Length: 157
Image (cartoon, rainbow, N blue to C red; front, side, top):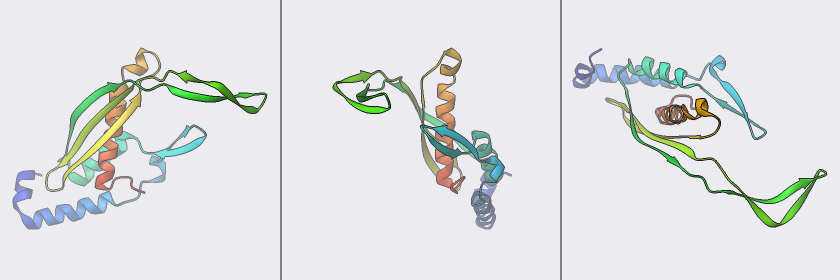
């Protein structure tokens, strides 16, 4: 499909938008929903590859992801006001400061001709060894893309 032709033809654009909205509003198939345990809570999520496949199908590969900003932000120390001793919560006389790792941040825009632009922000804590650290921006970037895609309607359910 030639996007420039599509944008000039109101009837074709109307059909394209109708088709895209139908694809975007479909519920996520159960097998695409992943689960992650975080601090005693199970979170549901979809992988970045699923989001990209839906974007390609809905917009016939006529979309762009623009990274607008990346940075690493140092974290403030966490204040610890109590400890657990023998199964009991005991308040500390003097709170402890526990260092926290820095965080990678990515801000980007998902741009779809004829549909507009949606911003996404993503982050990833910079922890672990070199192999984990080298992918922090990749992880934050995928997170930001998924946030922006959700604003178009992907995986809202």
